[in-house]
Length: 557
Image (cartoon, rainbow, N blue to C red):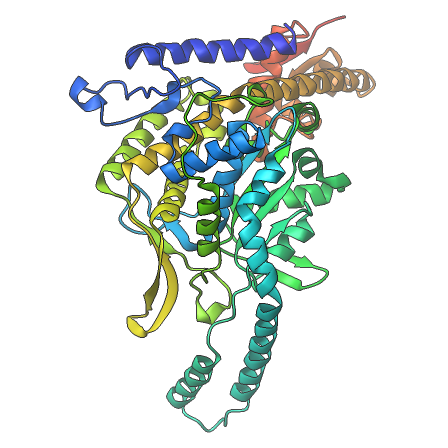
């Protein structure tokens, strides 16, 4: 079976299984229909939308809040670019300006908050139109940032000098002072310092670990918008493998909201904490996909984090049958983006520039739907279940949908206010607030994420199959080399010399190293559960039991 046939077979099996779910929940699902959760009463079903059955390639523009919907349609007509491309640009830019202000309360908990980055990738025959849409939406931000950057940088220099002077003064306090008196004096001096002036960030075109760490260093907001060409981004601009892996590690750590430590030539030791990304990339499949397949990044699950996608099926201009808005809204959206962007985020005075966003709460109806969706999803990713092969891709569906819902809520209802700090209203910090996540915004975020999943699955299937094919060829060649060497190594290697390999023997001989489809400590299981069955299926090895141990025998050519 060829790689193309294997990939097509995987997709066909997925669609057949998905058809069964559609049948369970009320028939074939159209672009604007939403199926419901199986195993619920008829009366209950209408309350819980699960848009997993929508296999159309139409961006769910009608599911978005009116502000987003109207401006996307307007730009679609004005720029003559695909709706999906425009939609991804607008959603990502909105996430960029909003993420510094929001953490989302977990839908299944009354305490804590959820930090997650939003990555998006558009695939199409061309990225034409993306840059123009991006410029229209961010023009006001860039103009404001350009006018204010110099002043803010001077403010930061003065603040840093003041901070150093206070530190020197504290170090010179008399040793005879009591601890309570000394602590009170130190608090008084620190209070006179005030908060570090905020310096707005911008977009980054340097896809390197050095550029990433530099842009997210502590004296800037912990947000980053990468606006770049995907082929070059994933190719690492010719980075050495070590630097490329370091960069990927940083992205993964920030995705998981973990702290990142590192060093840069310019700033020395740097520690990032609480950072979140808004990544917008554009690329052509004929450039991006082969690069990813060669390196096996899709199989590693890294690209699966880019849940917002515009697939090949959306190539070129596609007219949509919907009325243009009477009032242009792209300017309204751009002004709203600037209003949120220029508003200083909350900061903690004791750790410089660590952002402390306020918590976005849930409406009770939206929370219940999120809980129900999560339960349904957990059933679908169990071993052998419908979506189990796609588990790395959809593991964060609810989290990302919730964050998008919070972004929509802040864009629609956000207002500046004075946040009370440590119970003292006179020390209030500037912040943003918005209405709780509504059912409508939750469904909008969910529709975008599931749309993305449906577009990515074909690309991912093809990549994983290709990685597996490469690994299988590598393993069978390695088996032949080890077999030939064992012929001269005496009786202890008799089994290997006959082409018989146990899993332990393969591990000792280094078969688990460099497998493109494996990840971390899972290489041995990947070899046993995927690579060897793949070789057995193609007749290159056959399986047998030797001394009650599973082993594989290299077939004679």
